[in-house]
Structures are given as structure tokens and as C-alpha cells.
Image (cartoon, rainbow, N blue to C red):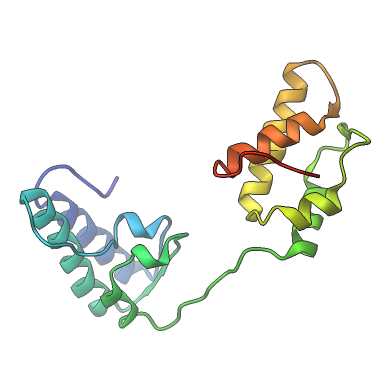
Amino acid sequence: MVVSKYIGETEKNLANLFAKAEHKDWILFFDEADALFGKRTQTANANDQFANQNVSYLLQRIERFNGIAILATNYKDNLDSAFFRRFESVIDFPLPGTAQRLQLWQQGFSKKSRLAETINLNTIAANHALSGAAIMNVIRFVSMQALSDGRCEISSKDLDEGIRREMPQRVTLGW
């Protein structure tokens, strides 16, 4: 709702947002911040120039903002480096370790579903360094697969396909 395809409208919308947040003691939360706070580029065309203009505006506005702004991204390297000089704190949330992944796998399935005997969650957690969100995506996918087939059991084939969807660079999976 903030970003506009019309020149100057994004900056206007951001100015309104920051102004409201300052006067109401709001906390601004920008999810997928790399989309808005991206790196400036060499200007090859008018689109690049306007994208750089948005970033430049945000750099100035973040510096003047007297409230709290939180940015979240999975792509920290895609943020313009000038923003990091303006941040008071940068907190990195690493991927879960094997034990945390195992816990997510164990607790993520519905009580009504059951896993095939061939599925070893310890091995899956150890062999597949997925984020918590990716694990939950796999669990939702395999659960929907089973439900759409009218079964309560999650098969190894379901899990293979679900993990493959989250890790497309992997061709084969081994338990």
C-alpha cells in the first residue's frame, strides 16, 4: 500500500507513514525490507533513477526518524549498505540447528496425522538444513497431500516431494 508505480507517490506515502508514526509513538515494522530498502544501482534508465530516489529518501528519513523502525529480511546482503550505518542494532537469526529442526518436525504435525514407519525425523532434521518456515511449509504441503488423498498417514514420498519443493536444487533425497 506504500509503494506506487507513479513517480513521487512512494516517497509521499512513506512521508505520511513516518509522520504518523512519530506523532503516535508507533513502531514501524517493514517485513521483506529488502524490497523497499534495496541497494542503489548504476542508473541505466529512468526506472533505476526512481528506485535510487526511493532509497535515498528512505536513507534521509530513517536518519531523522525519532521512533522505532524494525526491518526484517531474509536477504540482508540486498539492503543498501548505507542503511547499516543508520541502524542501532542488527540482529541475525541463524537457521535452526539439528535439534531445533527435529523439535519443529516433531511438533509440527497434527495429532490426527501419523508418519509412515519408514520416516525417521532424526535423519530428516540432520540431513536437511531448512529454516523453520520451510519446515512448516513442508508439513503443510504433506498434510494437504494426505488429506486430499483421504489418508491420515504421511508417506516418505510425500516428505520427499515437500522437501524437494523447498530445496529445488536437491535432485534426490536420502533418509
